[in-house]
Image (cartoon, rainbow, N blue to C red; front, side):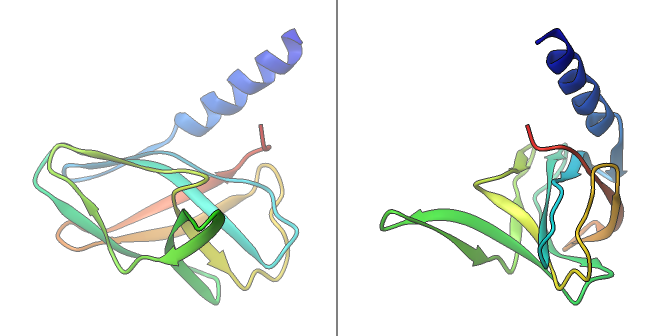
Length: 139
């Protein structure tokens, strides 16, 4: 059990070690999980120390990349495409499993632990920010 706790701390530390800054916006904990399918998801924390902004999209070297939000509808988990995600003034948004996430579609091969997924976040006011999603083991 001690080894599992130590491994979890190391993994979390390696994910949170990298942060990205664009004006008043900060991205932390950018990660993905391994996948063997044709799609994968990216997660992160987005903090805003200034005026409201909006995440309009994500660009990456995959056939289709979209902002999605998972939600429960009539007892069934669904995903909805999001044209923009508002980042409130002095606020924070979590892109996490079961909520907002970046959907990467059309993968030619799966992602493994340790892979780096490079992407560019596009904001309405702040511009573009290059981010790397680290593929980590599922908890």
